[in-house]
Amino acid sequence: MKTYFPASVLMFLICVGAIPHPLYAEVEHPNFVFGLGYGVLDNDSLVNIDFAINMPVAEHISTQVLLNSNYLVTGSTEENFAQSELSSNWFLSNRYGRIGFGLGFSELEPMDESLDVERELMGQVIGELFIDSFSLSAHYISNELTLSNVTSSRFGAGYYINEDQRISLYREEYGEGNIGWRLETYFQPKKYEQKGSVGVIFRTGEGYDYLGVIFQYYFDHNVSLQQREKKFH
Image (cartoon, rainbow, N blue to C red; front, side, top):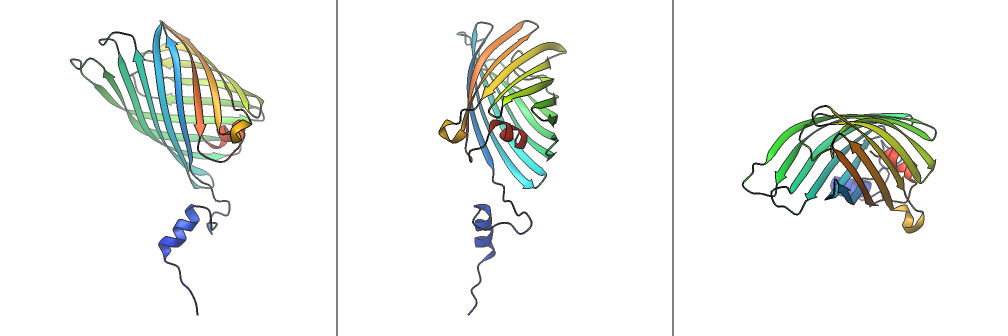
């Protein structure tokens, strides 16, 4: 007597990895990232909360949903702001690099309710090239609504000191043609199944300086920082 499983049950087993997909032998699972950061922006506090979902579609195609939230705390209600960005990005990739395109919207909300909330659509183009321990990256973003230099287009290079530590330098453009620089380093300890990393970021620009730290937690399997960043944006 033959036993048949409903299609919905088979799809569920494929999604959880119990059965390999017939068209995609190495089953890839979604990658979830939560980030919490704090920094000082010209003597004011800047808190950022980030959440990203990276979802493989095929062997060389993936998509991403990204939510970035930034809160500028100055001690004055009139000068406190919140900025949120929600975007959907799509990537084509191989072991040498990737290129991505995305659409979303940005919102700049004053804490003073008497002021208007500003919103705009934004587009993104992202490209990265991997050469051994080096990486070259470019990120263009169309929006002009930003808290100082929080959101920017940038171009730069990174170097992996080892598979779990990277240092990068970028040239940034933000707002209406303002130019700045960004120096950052990320480290992922092997403890705790390599599911957490810490980053230190220094940014300087025309009228703005920022120094901050960010902690990231990955809801997936343990993998080196270099492998993770090559696989997911």
